[in-house]
Image 1 (spheres, one colour):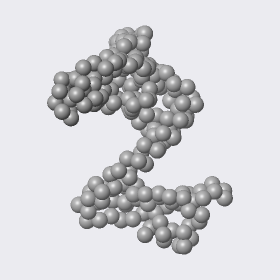
Image 2 (cartoon, helix red, strand yellow):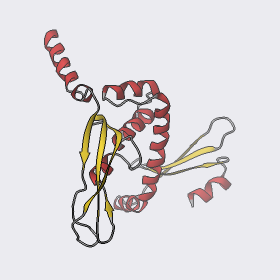
Image 3 (cartoon, helix red, strand yellow):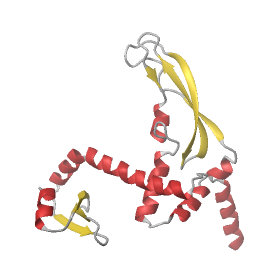
Image 4 (cartoon, one colour):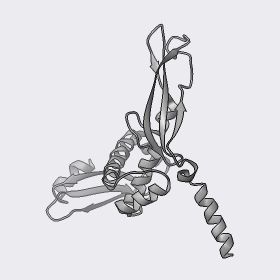
Length: 207
């Protein structure tokens, strides 16, 4: 049984992205269509760009992207597939960003632990970048939260409304962080910082 476990562990290690791609490989991305979405003309190759990127599925790699342009209207397109993996002008993929956020805030992992876990997935980042990615995760989450407010209201209405739970926390003399959530679905509805938990400070927020 011990020997079998060692064999399975060895096979698992060999299937990790770091073993599959021991050196940084190049992955090429093309636009999904050669036809201009604005005027229907066959587009031509404008140029190619290459940047380092990192995703959970592949690890570190070089992303080579072809850009097409329309000779009639000048419209330029790139690869939507690449945009779905890695944000424009960024090197860290969405999956890595979400992984860091979950590990940092939900699983209470420290920077060093996250760095080591990502290294096993062939994603090399430093400890300071983990802090940056964790903050970026919160910003992206807040923007997404605001973007789907209409859908959230519709979802809560399907359940007949919501039961409002309110809680606050603070450190020393810092502002109070107030969060409100639905007691049924446990969805966080909103949060803000207020000077105190007095009614005069809370009522405008709740309204």
